[in-house]
Image (cartoon, rainbow, N blue to C red):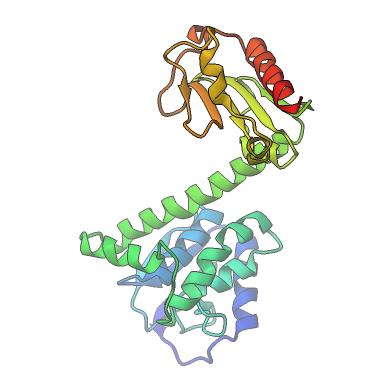
Amino acid sequence: MVKPNKAKKNNANQEREIVQFWLEMEEPLGIVTHIDVDADAVFSAALLQTLRPSAPVTFLRADKEVEAEGVIVVDMMNGPRAVKGLAHGSAFGLIVKAIKDKHPLLYKTLSPWAKQLNLTDKAKPCNDRVVLADMVNAWKECGLTDREILERALELVGGKWKWVKRRQQQSERAATIPIENGIAVLGVEDRVKAKDLFRREALAVVRENEDGMAIVLSKKAQKTGLNLSSLKNDDAFGEDWFFHPDGWLASYGGPKAPKNPRDAGISIAELEERTKVLMAEVNQ
């Protein structure tokens, strides 16, 4: 049932408890926010629907009160289930804070967005390069409806969460990769970032996957004088190999220009050996 509100507004602690309680409730659930959405409304709804995908989102007048069981009301002030986030800065910021214990990874990931919306929702200046409020305004100017804007916001929130979970998996996998004599060797199944291995003091990462082969040097390795450009004189590296002008990368193919590693003219073992020799020469 929806009707004008005459009830007392919820304070910050009550709003946080509303969010946490709703996230633990059994279905059916629902999410309500106001029509003519702004960034706080749509990203709050998108975050809640990301966490509870089966909960539909309904758009209502901002002055309505919702009393239905299992429904949470975001960026609206009226009713016992309303979460406006005035004391916190934004509804989105309050929701992000409320999920800290249950979803620490998502909390950490979305905290910069929450900090931004805490500013822009109060019409305060924000110096971030990409401003969520500007994105919503741009979507409106393109003629998108509230529902379509929600879909865009869901893509951003859901995609951000998927990305950060994948990065966590990559970091965990990187912690198991052996590093011998400063070199880490990555095979086809080792989908990790070189920077995660550089944090473990690897100087060079030798990689082979379905997109090609590569050697990547850490900044620390470069400071010692290591430069992969000298490998250009090696007959094993044909004209299809790319050498970065600054000498930190030698690659055959890659995600942006895939090549069959079997056509590289060198095996992963030989690539590792070339890297060992190069490092030994520099350390003499």
